[in-house]
Length: 174
Image 1 (cartoon, rainbow, N blue to C red):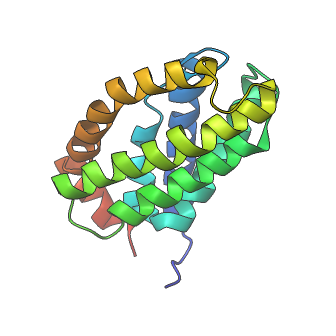
Image 2: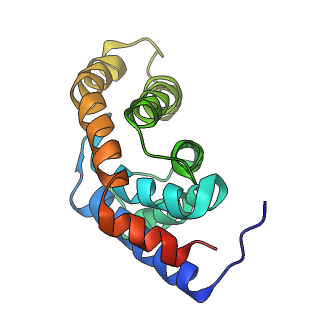
Image 3: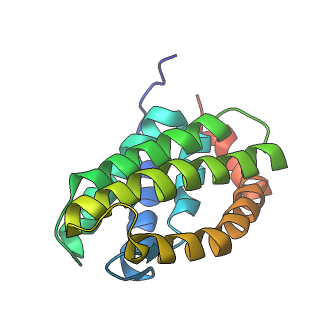
């Protein structure tokens, strides 16, 4: 299904990309092996409004802009792949679907398992020449998972159920 590109869509996507950059790069907490941020909130909205492909593209744009404007480490393309897959997952779970606890928890689990527990350890192992099953990679990742998984599931549900957001979806969607 093709979605018609409108100026409203481009402007909305631009605002969401900018919000994602700010939440990720400026307000996020980052160490060498861990990044903690709420940049997934604009991704929820992108997924709801524009679907998997456009949410993935928006996340890639946010990743490139964030690295260009606020570089904190060397650019690594694997994290751009993570951004695209994250957008795809959010779009899959929330585009033109009723926001339920099942979708909110499923989306949080999918992003956590695929991105945080599978892909990111591989990229960190490649970047820093650490063994894949090193405690340096896994200790912060598992702690983050325990803390952020319920928070992410709750925010997925709450953001998706916001009344002003539902009105925006009706105005922006084709």
